[in-house]
Amino acid sequence: MEIIAESERTAAPHDLFWPWFAANVSVFGMTYGSYLLGFGISLWQATVVAIIGIIISFALCGLVAIAGKRGSAPTMVLSRAAFGVQGQKLPGIISWLTSIGWETSLSITAVLATATVFRALGWGSGGVVTVIAAILIAALIVSAAVLGYHTIMRLQSILTWATGAMTILFMILTVPHIRWSTVASLPDGSLQQMIGALVMVMTGFGLGWINIAADWSRYQRRSASDSSIVAWNTIGGSAAPVVLVVFGLLLAGSDQSLADAIGGDPIGALTTILPLWALIPFWIVAILTLVSGAVLGIYSSGLTLLSLGIRIPRPAAAAVDGVILTVGTIWVAFFAQSFIGPFQSFLITLGVPMASWAGILIADVLTRRTDYDEAALFDARGRYGAVDGISVGTMVVASLIGWGLVINSFAEDAPWNNWQGYLLGLIGGKEGTWASANLGVIVALVLSFLVTLVVRRGRIQRQEAGLMRRGA
Image 1 (cartoon, rainbow, N blue to C red):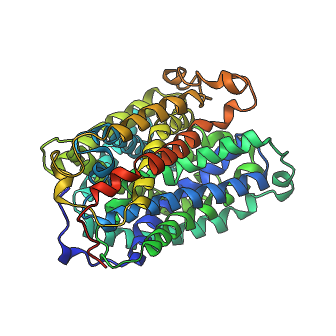
Image 2: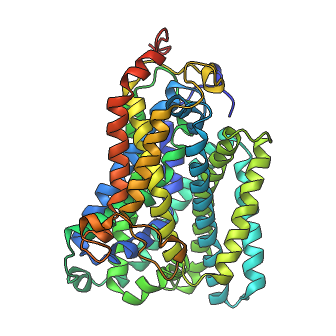
Image 3: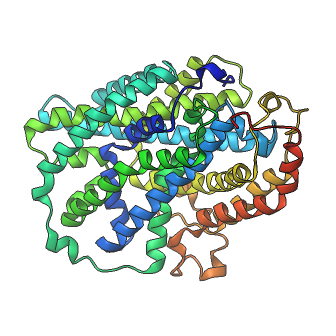
């Protein structure tokens, strides 16, 4: 989490396209077609929700990425300017848990797909295959993550071409499975169902990455345009998912059995509609795309762990994450009855405090006019202080309100989340039409943004006294 030297800040805004595109070109994006239709909405409604949710959520990542250009540190270190050097540990812990959850989810998906493909090819199945696959995939993720920024960027650019080509081939091979009349006949859902689907898309895409958005932009030149950074983050992150989700809508809407199978084994279910000869290349590329996303996550979650004050080398931090995701993957593969239930419940639960943090940091970034005092980010006695009571209090209150306005729609698969929704009585109760909209995520984001924009403006101006924008 060291400060990046000015001599190393040589990246241009368009370089941001590669890590974001490579991490999101995964065929896993197609499975969201099934998840969206599960809200009971039609094809056109799901398409609108997908396009709006994906683009807006990655644009929010772009706004956070501006902080990386103004500082030279990881996202969770830069966030100390808003929360204080010690106060930042609250969102830091949430961020680390979010990253761990995402890494584990991607690893689980890769392991389940491996087991399905091996079974289809007659190469073996059962617990031994699952355990070996989990260990090997975790080792691959951790090994790539410890190589560092420059190696990861090169790997991502290579993976972009390989995964993009295989994804196009998959789409060509599976087009015959689309039944246009069946998909077009899906009935419309309500506004509340569309909002619920929108929240799921935003938390599943951009908001799922927002806590690491500045980790890659800290290598940008000081003179880089803020608008260019936002644009390339948005383009890189959303270009592939928009196409993949819409195609996934067509596949899932054409075949209910496929849509149901995706809930238990997202990538493996997609292999069932491929010819046998295509299984191996599809499996290899699918695994690489999932590993690509997990590598970005584990690299940044290691930085987050260090930002919490844990004094270990970054490779050791990545190894800690590797052990956790291996154990989590094996547990889900052997004991969980469903993948999609716990996954979506996890997205919504941690999505609320992450949305609140994002609202606070985005308002902080938009209010500031100068570069960060990088030394003060590591000094609790510096201009950013130890704890910013306004930001910490805002995040706590907004999260409590947000959790009260979301509901655990997967009570059987994730009973540990049934405590949420305690404020839904204000808008019709848990059985009301607004319950499934999961408004808490949006409320936490907007409320935190507005409070920070208004209440912290004077404090930010005092923090910036005497600072200059070095790239000017």
